[in-house]
Image (cartoon, rainbow, N blue to C red; front, side, top):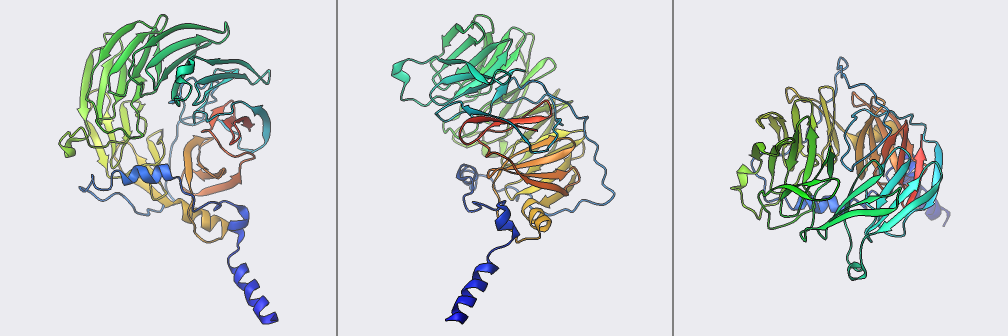
Length: 438
């Protein structure tokens, strides 16, 4: 009997290690099913080239120059990309935690105007929470009872105390949250399906039929619309819009990329990235949000990574590599994470892969533990380090050369994507409470 107990103890101990105790591998079986299903959609569509899946160790002589660290004070829209190397102390100290801000599912991206957090939820509630006053200063719901049972998808942008909102019902409206009143509202009757961009007197948005709209920011009147290719089948990808100098760069769900002049609103050029599919409107297209960086456009699609000339849309290089997170670009470097959980650094001038490391194996080596699966939430660049946020709220900090510097468990569980404000990170936890960590 004693021998049996001893064997059971040995067997149990052999399945425990520092990695299990640390919890970084926790819920490793519960991989984000949304990501898995997304890639299944494309398994039969792409057969030209095999996706990149190689380990390329960084050399000891590798020198990577990044853009200077920038301290951000505001986060005005969901695809905010003003800085690509945020200031962050990474002390993992809990500065503040609010009460619950919503009883419903909130948007996975929050905004910050310099004083207040702005968020939306699937009931259509828009909440403005003052970080200084530590209280909700405004809450608004635009929708009538007949829309009560419909889940809302709100796309938000903020400027000068005004929240601009486009939704999946076809409404576009603006609210002054200081004066606590609705300024104007328009019903287009076709669901919007993009982020919002604000520039001068204009609001830029696109609908689910891939029509590109320009509205007057002050009264909601329509200034211009540009019909583009429609898709029959809808997936999780939404239209993506960025502003670069005097042009809007617009990527639609069909896989076409447009450059539209900000002044006269005429098309500068356009390019389609689905040539290999005979432009079939039933084909699925997926991409991370489009990035405009210096003289380049960066598109991380499935299955290719494109770097294009921003002035004429010509392809500088194309690689058969897919990123599961929004890419990070800084200096002459592009950083992505593949669906095989490889952290990859790429030179954006030449397309040369400077390194590719297995995140799971690097974690296992750092912890001196067994290699198990992880579930990645996002990638950021802060204080010259690449920060890999995991869905179980661990933060893996890589040096820019692909070597792990530190692994920490955040004080609170991530609900929304984190934003970087004044050397701290802000996010809503899994109970919809605002968390501030330095």
